[in-house]
Length: 243
Figure 1 (cartoon, rainbow, N blue to C red):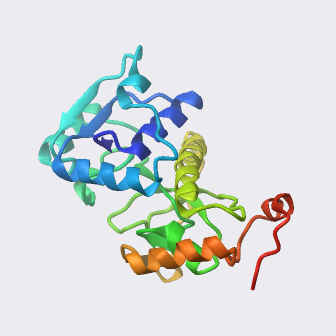
Figure 2 (figure 1 turned 120 degrees about the horizontal axis):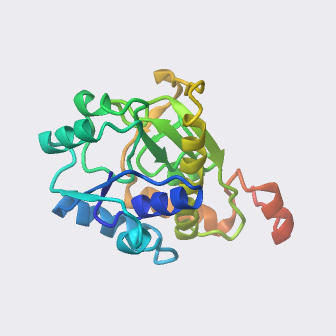
Figure 3 (figure 1 turned 180 degrees about the horizontal axis):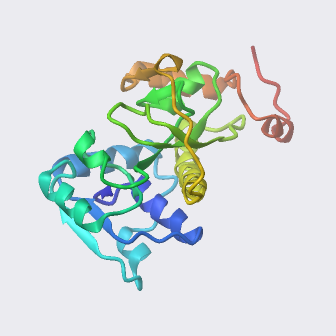
């Protein structure tokens, strides 16, 4: 499931095909909120990366595409019940999913969050990680009715190098999320694998970052005071991090 031309959904499709995992169907929400989300997510990467269009990714593949004006609708619930999937991948979903929908796939709805759960829940996890001097990374998880609170399937940090801009990190994170998702789906294909539940107290849900906070993130990267640069990146750049 994805919203119209959502970069995450397109990257997830690309990564899944590269890993030899093909969906049995794709459900796309076409709506005004979906178009606003597309604009926001595209701007966030500053034009540094764009996955192939959905039509190009699906060209030559016998994968049905279902269009909807709202993912969280009785129509989509009925469609999923008919399709009876083992797993549904959420690559940008319009709205918070409810219990009646979440319970349809046998192994659940799976998402990939551009932050290391459980600490970096909610909006702008990259920015908050940089402000908190916490590692940047992505987490594949099974979705529940909360926001980024479901059981963790697979997580991996993303190396940050001195000189990286916020937009460059966002662009690399999109590709990284595709890789993390594919690895997570590989784990879920093992019938004996059990995702690791999160504890509510191990993280907080962050709100959308204000322009002022985002400016602080950019300034911190510009002067090189982020506390979790990768060791390899520091050695390659020859830059000593300022304290």
